[in-house]
Image (cartoon, rainbow, N blue to C red; front, side):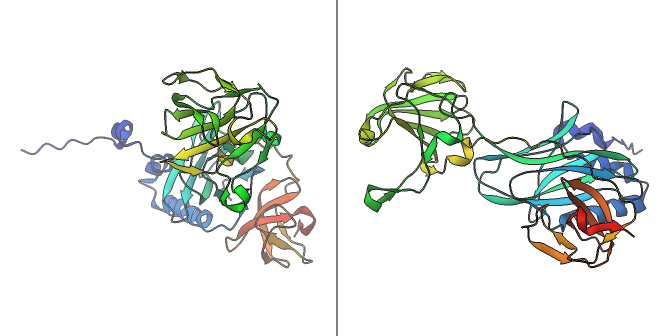
Length: 353
């Protein structure tokens, strides 16, 4: 006698950790036409040409007749954290893929929002995909922006205090700057930027008085040089915001204004620290433009663009082609043509059919 045990796939979710897309697609097991429609919408998003240069805030619309689907390409620097969020709980799928369509991360529920956080381990381009679940009706806020991986290494200071960047000429052109110089008054506190261990304290060479902190999570080394004094010891555990020492001009900085040379080392090699500490802000929600249910391009320089900006690259002049409005960012409609082409058009070149 043969005994067959049938186990629901969800039983193994805590082990396999399937994506939100995989879990949602289980609802189509007995509805192949719906699955086909869902996959076709994903294909459209995967071929979108829209880009995000630094950030975007959009009001997005979905309905039973026109489910929202869109892809956004963004170029990330090593050290940045990509953040995308949609102000809805269970009616949207939000993901990030590499350009070969490999899933890198999907969103998690945080404070009644779907929030995606992705930390690249190298400079790379990725595609964010936002797709509304079928047969849902929603108008909500969607944002994409980047944030630094770490906090700022000088207490109470920010981007304006960085006055010399990675790659600047040093030693009469014999070498290049392998860090950021952050200026502040002498004896101003320099602080840890994450949880870690003080791995070394030194007073020698070009860096003068130095503190090295090893990031507990990644193993990266954080280098603070030209200090006037340190107040930690080797082996100390530190948390973000803990004071390590004070701004000075020791080492080869004796003839310069007080500052800290801050560097980051991965596997013994210096990397540009700016993306790790450059402070950013999330964009504000955008007001919603009037919804034109049967819209078309105006016929006069009706350009479909990659970004909501008049300086953005033109995808196509749509002439008088019908379009479907799926959202807006500021004064720019996010539209899609009947052939599936998506992008942004200024409200002045969109009109009712």
